[in-house]
Image (cartoon, rainbow, N blue to C red; front, side):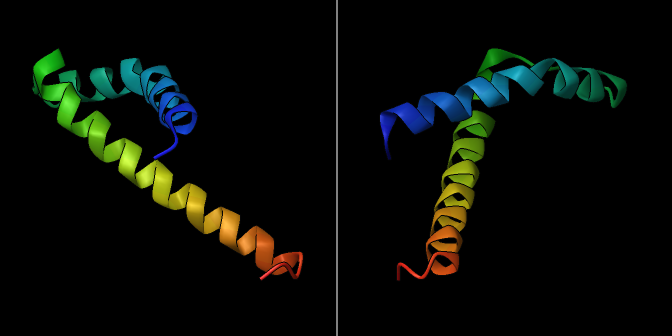
Length: 65
């Protein structure tokens, strides 16, 4: 995976981390950095796949297949 994209995806995840923490706190789930890491990795995979899907769709729309 492109390091720049991975970093951008992590920055997006960190932007929404406080909101996620609030929701988990309300649900009674304690959030620690040890627990966050696997979810950050999963988020990065999801974002990479979504990025690639968007890239391919954009190419199709421009007729660059």
